[in-house]
Image 1 (tube, rainbow, N blue to C red):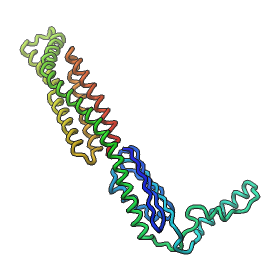
Image 2 (cartoon, rainbow, N blue to C red; image 1 turned 180 degrees about the horizontal axis):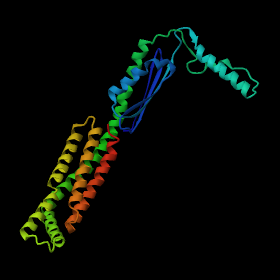
Image 3 (cartoon, rainbow, N blue to C red; image 1 turned 135 degrees about the vertical axis):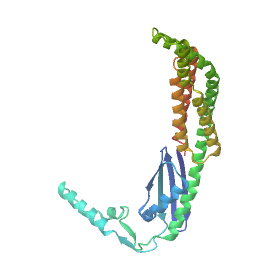
Image 4 (cartoon, rainbow, N blue to C red; image 1 turned 60 degrees about the vertical axis):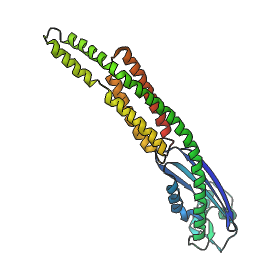
Length: 291
């Protein structure tokens, strides 16, 4: 689901700003944007995010402005030499009459760094602290959206449960109609064959029994109750919602296929089934936004 948080912390050593944004995604996809000073802590940042977020495309932007340098600056020679070579190549290729601007080169990210190459443990601890606090704010914003999405899903699920209850009431009325229709069709198809009426009635009853949707309706009701329980428990429910929607869709399609041709009652069953499928799609769309 979508979420946003921004946190700024200032210490005697410098200022850190952490910004978190997310959009819908079926799994966790973390994108980091870190300054050169924090590159060494990329895995730490990624692992910290994974501890508190399990789903979504999460954009993590962290800036760090130290108050003052704590050591001598060192030139990143490979980067500087690459920049210089690119400058000379461009000047020759395009006939440019200019000299390299060293001050501009020094302003490039990573061109100058403090001589100490060892990661700063204190800076890493401060980074984790700021990130954890930002993640708490981030999850609060997602929780607010999640409560709204849960309300939408509950409403859709209540309609599915009501439709399943009505389908259950119609079931006993639909079955005799299907049996009569099948017997009429069998009589028409087998006219002249000489099949005994009792045998004909038995065959029609067998075919009608195969059109019985009792199990499918009961399973649809069970899935609806499972969905309600899932929402009440909370936690990570996105993937479980996907599975339940698949099962509900399968049961509804079977109900519609089995009750085809049941007259006016069949039309009502069809209306209810289409309504259930509409609510299933409504829940499925929202499930993409839920962790």
